[in-house]
Image (cartoon, rainbow over all chains, first blue to last red):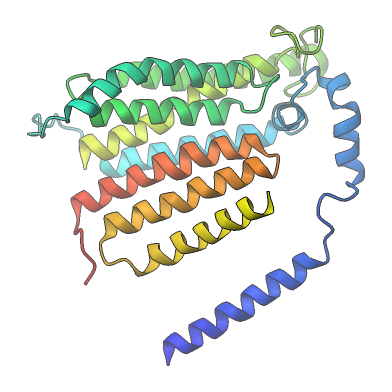
Length: 226
Length: 79
């Protein structure tokens, strides 16, 4: 009986969603704000990747909130799981040769790829969140394959704090120079150059460090403490 | 192109249904990761490479790892 009711409810919800979405034309005329971003975005922010110009420049304060949410989640996991005392090294089965060799060869490449993604966030697809997630998946490989390598918790906390601090300090500098938070006060330079778009690449590098170290610390807490 | 996309959507549905009926939780997590991976390919076809990257890294790699760590601490088979 319960199963039939739940299937019926599911069908009703699916019908509702599909009927409400069917009216929206796919990819057809944008709203006024969307058109403004597409036409004037490169001129106003200097970033050729429009997604980045929206995420970091037009909606920069929103991004600060998102980063804070992730930070609170990481702190929550740490507070729930960490017991505060040193654990004895657990007996772990050694990784297989394939995993060990793959980890040693691939980890530097994954790290470089993640760094490339967030340094070029204002030019090519991707940015701080994506680069940070890729770097965290590289550290996950370290936890799986090369168990004799330990990740320094102090260094990861330092990277996280520095990332957050850089974001806020740059926002406050904008407040001091031009009158509002996260003002792009640096020269915008030539579009498509690596050193362009003012504060956008600096903020994205800070976000990359912050997201990467936060996700790594979540994995570290789950593997080491639980 | 339409065939490739339809195949991917069907693959995604199969993965989602399989994730809900598997009794072995590790297999269910792998099926859920497959859904994320196919979703990231579909995002790429829909010209959203940013979202595709985040989905592949977080949905397929990190979430699956977190679930597997949790399963290792609890029970592997559902009653």
